[in-house]
Image 1 (cartoon, helix red, strand yellow):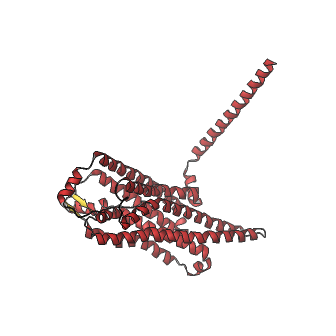
Image 2 (tube, one colour):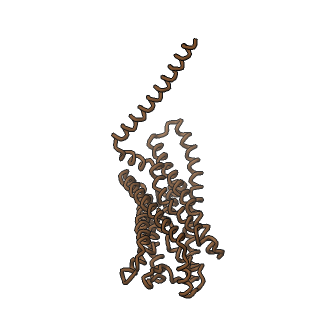
Image 3 (cartoon, rainbow, N blue to C red):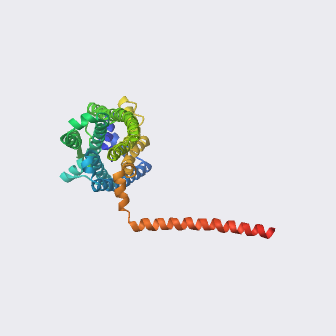
Length: 368
């Protein structure tokens, strides 16, 4: 999933920067060292590479989910990968535009500024992905802890409405802010550059509460209760297995546990990759402003971007339907050749050991 975006980046700059005149700003810009420019260039390149890996990985996992017909069984998980794919793709496009150092002129320059340079399309995917992963957690919680209620009350239209909400909410929140606080001056894009400090402070508090505090709490509470419920179910299954539990029931329970384990790993990766950025935002809201500028902020963003690269591998390794499809995609001839090569290496090793033993025995006989 493409993580973080310039929305909070530029709003944070607006909140932490005192009003200065144009002369001071220009002087500061001319004093920018070449080393910082090089660091920014390498940062952009690293983000593009991670975006490419994330796009390819999420596209592959999405194909495997569709091929395994999981889009009917787990529509929210499929929607999660669609949002991650969307964010990853526009992460590549947005940072490729920044690397081109375009001069934004006219109507075309304005729309390039507010759509690509601002990373708002990345933010749409990012925010939607965060909402969706919380929805997946709640859905799993209801099906495991309140299974009877979920079978009776949880309907497909609720799931579809949640999926639509994960797409529409970021658009409804971000678009008005972007259009009222962005503009182009002298060929330079000022995305979210005209936000007031009060507006920025309110937005940052909302952002921290919505995508860190609330989502972290949902993860911890829901999966904590689910683990307790799974242990209880495991004891019941063990008791019934002695009496001959239905095989189909056992397989169904194992599939459900597999999905839960996969999502726990996804959520744990989410928390670990987002904690550094959460610390930066807390520092920003408190007003110490020790972490928002410089390498600390860039490192926190890189850690978040790594989530988009690592997330597909969790599904590939832990989610059985996806793993089976990906395994079947490997050409059978390649698998046979690999197994044959490994057997030959093993045979050579055993022969070498045997020859070495025979040589040692011959030497001993010669000495005698």
